[in-house]
Image (cartoon, rainbow, N blue to C red; front, side):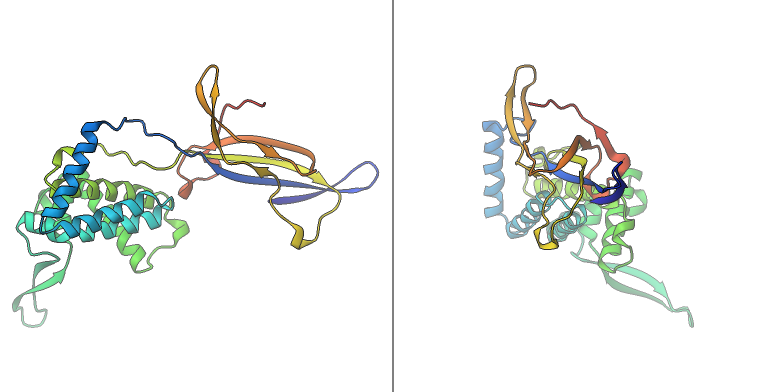
Length: 286
C-alpha cells in the first residue's frame, strides 16, 4: 500500500492511497478427463508398490511428489521434489547396475604422483536416469542441462550460496525438471512406464488475479483499527451466456471515498513475477 498527500482547493489535506491485492483462481477441473482406464492404471501402480521390494521407496517418493505439487512456493516445492528423487536413488541405481549413493573417483597425489581411488557420496542412480546414460559425457545436451540445473540449484540452496531474491526463475525451471524426472522414475520403477510422458505438464492452481486501485481520505484510523482496504469474496464459478462458466468475485466497500478499482492477471508464475508480468484481462461489472 502506498500513500500520497495532496491538497484540495480549500487547503484541506487529502491522502491518496494506492493498494494492490492478489487473488488466485481456484481450479475445479483438469483439462484431461479421468477415465476408468486411468483409474485402473493407478490401482495397478499401487499394487506394484505393495509387492515390490522397493515399494516403500516408491511410496515415499510419491508422497514428496504430492507435497511438491501442492506447494505454490517454487523454491520449497523444488526442495521437496529433490527429496523425492533422493528417495528413488536405490531402485534407480540398482536398475543401472550401480552401487546406490556412491561413485569411485580416481586421482593422484600431488607430491609423489601415487594413483588412488576414493569413494564419494553421489546420486549416481538419479543422475543416470536423468541423463539416460551411465557416462555423463555421452548424454544428450538437453538432459545435461536439466541435471546441471537441478544439481546446481540444490547445492546453492543447501549451502546458502545464493540469495533467494536473486534466484529469478531458476526455482521454477528446476521444479519443472525435477517433477518431470520424479514422476517418470516412479512410473518406470513401478513397471508402469506407459504412464510417463516425454512432455510434462505441472498441475497446479489457477492464474493469479490482481486487484489494484486507490482511494482518498482526509483522516486515518488508529493503527489497531487498520485492516484490508476492501473485502473480496472467494472466487466462484458462475454460468455465463456466452462463455459457459466464468470466475466471479464480489467486492465490499466499507465507506472508502473516490474508490477506483482495476483487475489484471499475472502472466508469469508468482515466484518471479514483476510489474512487467501484469497483463490486462477482460472483466464485466454486474
